[in-house]
Image (cartoon, rainbow, N blue to C red; front, side, top):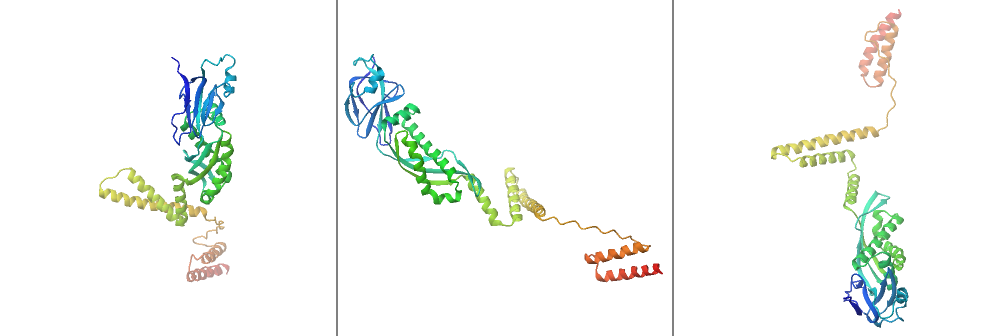
Length: 347
């Protein structure tokens, strides 16, 4: 037998419950003359065929053709005033909803002027109230198909995170500048969200950004960069990194007894230090400006016999002295010897 609702009222709604549906599923069979009881700080909205129709404020209401004209017009002339009609009623809590927590379920990726790319998490709270119950039911239930309080709250939190992501992208502030901009970001976020909430019949009362923090991966990258700046000596830093990498590899591979483990660790550190030194030396060599090649001098013959060969040998001695390859005493001794031989060939 079809149940006919002669008295329609919301079940007990907690202070954190936003909306209640009567009946919970399906459609209710309602007829004229039924009593609609709307609690204090509630509005009741009749809903049928995807549309929010007549709305009632707090109090007791007897349903007549006069106070539900939109519903009667929708049913048409076939409705005779006696047969039950099918509809559902949404009871909307109109009180302030305080301390609604929100947060990023996934990190927000942003371009940072100092670090290049960062991933951030943000958390906060907001408060709101339903200002227009009929618009709220029409937009949230009719357009978006959200029926339960939890679904509606999740949708609102999603709107907050989406607006914050857009705001951070527009601001262009770096990670290290965000802490001092928390209050300004909160004001801008409220202004950005107010119009969106108003479109669904909700008034945004307050919104707070409690924290904006980097993810563990971003913090690790910041620590690495700070360590490089603090170390200053690139060679020492590379040696440290290479030794630590080899130590991690040794741990990952297991290891034997105490003696072999100790030897392995010492060898690993030594190899890491050597590897770091080679890398640093190669980098230093690559960074040094290339010196232009010096023109090569013709090699002097080992046992000159002609005037030209002796003269070439004397010229070579001059270059070797200038480059510091031979001492001045040796230069004078050799020069005297071959100068005498040159004079003999001239005679």
